[in-house]
Image (cartoon, rainbow, N blue to C red):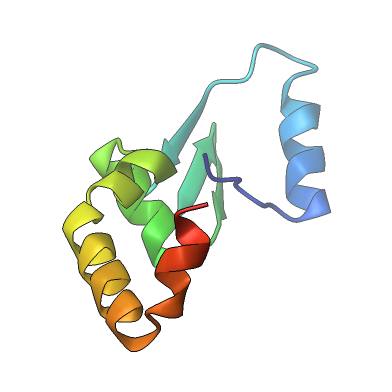
Length: 90
């Protein structure tokens, strides 16, 4: 899950809108924008967060998608540091 961070004045404006009616907002992850009524606020997301949100993948799923790369890294690391195999077997 990623957090959308807005400036305090922007959050205050959103809360003010709720005084008149329920707030209906749209979040455009690709554009990095939150729209509510006539207001539009920008926000930043790290490229990885944007990718995960647009691909509907969580952090665990994203890690599991890299299984082969992780296994190759571990194999190469054990080849460079064979003593780790004894530690990892415990």
